[in-house]
Length: 216
Image (cartoon, rainbow, N blue to C red):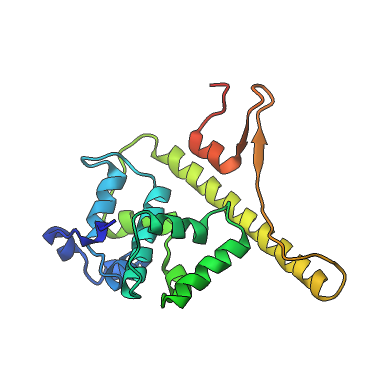
C-alpha cells in the first residue's frame, strides 16, 4: 500500500500537540503516519480528488495502522493481504471463529492485536479530527445526508454485533451447563431488507451504501 510513506512539510508543521489531543492525531504520531492527515483532509473535502466518506476514511486509516503493525512485527504483507486481514477482523459477514483465528495468527506473528484494535478509529473520530483539529469543511450540499446514512449504518452494525455476541454467549452457557447439545458453532447475524414493490432483497448495509433498490 505504501500510502504512509508520503509526507509534506506543511502537514508535519500542523502535526503539533493540539492534534495529538484527538485519537486520530495520536495514532498518526504513534504509527509514524503524520503525513496522512493532509491526505485525509483532501480526500474528504474533494480537494483535487474524488470525495471519500468518513466511513471510507476510517477504514482506509485503520488499514494503514494494520499495515504498520504487521511491518513492525516483521510480517511483510503481500499484495491484498492487509485488505483481507482487515476484513477478517472487522467484517460483518465474518464468523466469530474466523475472526478469532485471524487475531490469533496476528498475535502469533508478534502483532499486539488488542492494542491495535483499540487504536482503530471510527468515522466519528475522523470527523472530529478533520473539523476540530484541522479546521476542514466539507462543501458538498450532500454532506448532511451522507453523514446521517453513516450514522444509521454504524448504529445498525453495533446492534448486529451485540446480537451476535449475546447469542454466542448464551448458547455457550447453555452448552457448558448441559442444557444444549451442539458441536462447534458460528453465529451469523444478517439484517435483510425486501422491497415489496420490486421484490429485490438487500443486506441493509449494502442497501444504505447503494442508496436505492431496483425500483430506481
